[in-house]
Amino acid sequence: MSQPPLRLGIAGLGTVGMGVVRILRQHPELIEARTGRPVTLSAVSARARDKDRGVSLASYGWEDDPVALATRDDVDVFVELIGGDSGPARDAVEAAIAAGKHVVTANKALLALHGQALAEQAEAAGRALRYEAAVAGGIPVIKSLGEGLAGNEITRVMGVMNGTCNYILTRMESAGLTYEAAFAEADGLGYLEADPQLDVGGIDAAHKLAILAALAFGTKVDFAGIELEGIGRISFDDIRAAGDMGYRVKLLGVAQMTGRGLEQRMQPCLVPATSPLGLLEGGTNMVVIEGDAVGQIVLRGPGAGAGPTASAVLSDICDIARGWTGPVFGQPATTLAAANRAIAQTPAPYYLRMSLDDKPGALAKIAAVLGEAGVSIDRMRQYGRHDTAAPVLIVTHKTTPAALSGALEAMGSTGVLATDPVALRIEEV
Image 1 (cartoon, one colour):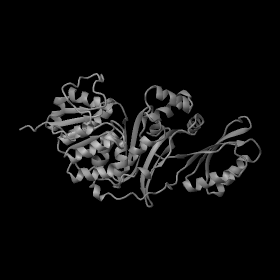
Image 2 (image 1 turned 180 degrees about the vertical axis):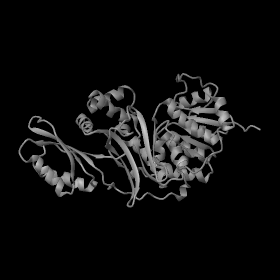
Image 3 (image 1 turned 90 degrees about the vertical axis):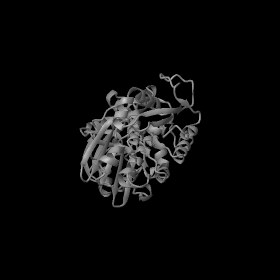
Image 4 (image 1 turned 120 degrees about the vertical axis):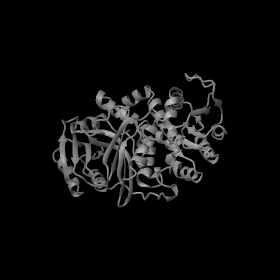
């Protein structure tokens, strides 16, 4: 005997919301065959009822208030695609759980800031809270960590999780653009958020990293514990120099559990140009997961867009239709430990770029400062004189952030720096 339909209410009819509607209309038989029951859309909610979205919504109920949609009697699963860490999105999700509804969301900001409370509420009510679409678009990274790798102790999670930043950095390299020019190009193509700092400031990607870290390491989501830096200070000189040294610049998120606690950082790094992350182009996302049993796996795919993100939303809906729920972050929310924050001290090589006054002994003074701080030089390259300064590149052997910071501070008193040095971590992948 067939099961009754699983009835959806979708709040937010932007790119992703309409992508979900289209998939539901295009593949009803396929979805029913794979889940064992029909999946239907009961009602929707958005800001503008009369907007032309390319698909008629006349056959569905309409609610101006997403909270009203979340509590309708003919909705079993509330699909939140509004966005934002508070306001209507949070109110509607909380109302849906309180009303006994399952929730599917693509809202990484909501989960990064309120994930623990929402997880406890959903699990106490026996409801599912699913969020595959919140991280890396169409890449099934949440399912991979929570299910496929459940038998592993995860040692490190890292990746490029913001396609806009990756687009800007790769365009700077391929077209020789300044940061400002590549930013303007991305903006013209509609790649940037309404608040561009969410992208180029690393905030959007850091939201995703916080979610992955909680799932990977059994900790409460701790967005505030992430060391965060965007790509605004990366110049074309860095892009070119990194290439000369065999590296590429990426906005890289890294989370790893150490003896001191959980390190979480989102910052521009250098990666080997021939590594999977180094080969990543344009707006594509990539997540690298390392576990004690599986070793290293690499997940690559589109990180945004109507089709890929809607595909991830549908994967969660299908799981609920099959009766699969499970804990929100891989284990009961009440058992998740508060993350013991650890400022990054894991040793790594570093890239240094600086301009030195073109006078005898300048480079020797810099080398002496590094040596006194215990920072060993692996490679060094000096470019031709520019005006009265000489550009210099240094790649260090592995050193701690603290030792490097001390060396950079001491360089200021040498009297030979024409510009402030730029230091970027080199991540081994």
